[in-house]
Image (cartoon, rainbow, N blue to C red; front, side, top):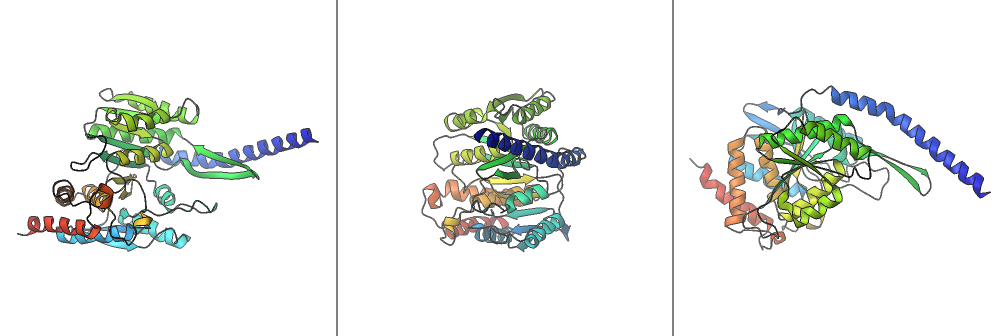
Length: 388
């Protein structure tokens, strides 16, 4: 009896797998075709501007997201930033299609957004991450997290300046998983040549623009020889077009160890989705934690800015101790993106002075200041610089 049951089970597994592959084959080809149609690799800012002012979508998120966004608006007011916010409430509880549609339409209309992180429920199989939906439907193909040591913030490693660039729309985040039979799950990791080439090209162009010397591709091609092998090969082909930039590659588990032991060896990293998420969080921890790092999500047509580690800070909500630095720096990145460079410099300099020189720091950095005290100190530093 056992042998016929095993043969039947294998037959079911194979037929299910073949059917699944066929069903996704068409969608993969269509997705690849749509990516190939995008000729440009560098992105030009697209945003709405009326009467000299730019409208930005503000997506509330969960945890400390809403309060940090309100502080950004307060500082923008004192700095005289010509930005108006279109505020939308979207969080882990607002999972209906209409809320997502409203958020997408707002970003598509304005071209740019500043958002708090939206929590994802991992105990509901049918739950779709709003973060992932926004990134994929807006085709925000590149995530950039720039981790740099901050003077006055004590960490084990000093002098770090690492840029992590992550493919943001496929890989393990493709949401293609199903239960074949009870106790057996198949999860598809999608890697395409088009998107691997695009993110590699973006990483090398970013390195070139910012005067960086080396790009490292992170992968697991020793085990996933086809998927990660394709990503690595795509990076190698792109690297051959940039002889002035050093290129090497590293297996992700070794890269994780190297990052915490000898992080100074890294310059620019490019990697698939999941590895980028892990290494971005590790590197953020090396320069002070989730409260001090900003993140950018860039597409051909839209851009969304947020804190670099995508932590909602739920445990800090309402306690007045959350570090606002990461969100403020994200807002400065946004201002640079839309061309408000003087305002970005003004706010960024004040944030850094308050944190590094005046040592007004929240508990996560070893200080005793409240969030409001940090914000007030930044405002007091900005005031004399904006008065005529």
